[in-house]
Length: 306
Image 1 (cartoon, rainbow, N blue to C red):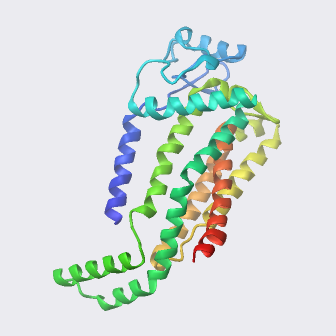
Image 2 (image 1 turned 45 degrees about the vertical axis):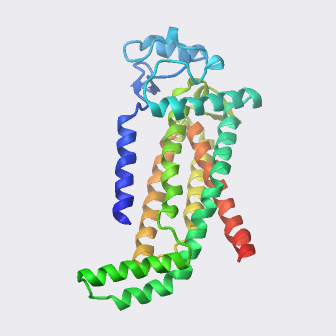
Image 3 (image 1 turned 90 degrees about the vertical axis):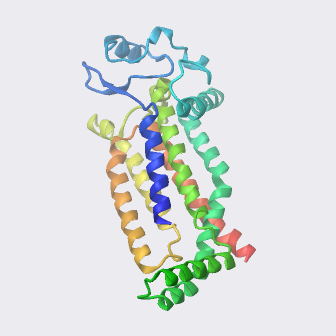
């Protein structure tokens, strides 16, 4: 199982490394970082001036790009399958919803919710697997004791067969529990790509937050209100991890998962200071929805079905 997970992880990483990612340049006047390979024209005079002053670093011909309001899935030159099939359609949806609700910050939050709703059947299946694994754990522990210190080929084969029988008894599919986690990676990657490469998404504001500004930049300019964004990222991430069901795993796995949760929480907490508000909004909404749907599925749906 671990080998399969590692193999899939390597394959996903290879896909990411071989697809066109956001390219950045540093504005020589402000020393701020901007996206070089944007998909449509900047809309504000300030942003237009930035790109005009850094033409050598910009990877696209700004004059040939469509206006963001006129952006289509087929706009621009072909880059790769990931950009054509996922990033551009996602960017198009965010732009169109933004035009409907008159705010791109709200559009990002709405699209984040829609993605979580689409993935909800997979979430339920993953939680069901965790519950079934919890029920099977006593028998799996007995099996471990039965074959302890038996490393010959026949014993290992018998152990594998008996394990699969237990899985079949409790309707456990080891791979289905990992499917949701792996599916989130390309979706998150595409969302980050779409936000980074559509300048209009980073030029506007939601309430008092500039969508293209990071909390660190906001705090450095004296706007301590951006600490709210950092706090929301940390809190939603913490409760999202806390709500994960680890009861079906053995003590060693629980310890490893707890360590990974703590490590990820610390890493995300530090990274939250450098995430543009636009991306932070997606993370907050997605994590908050994850918390609520897990509570609903585990405390209501599963109890009702059992």
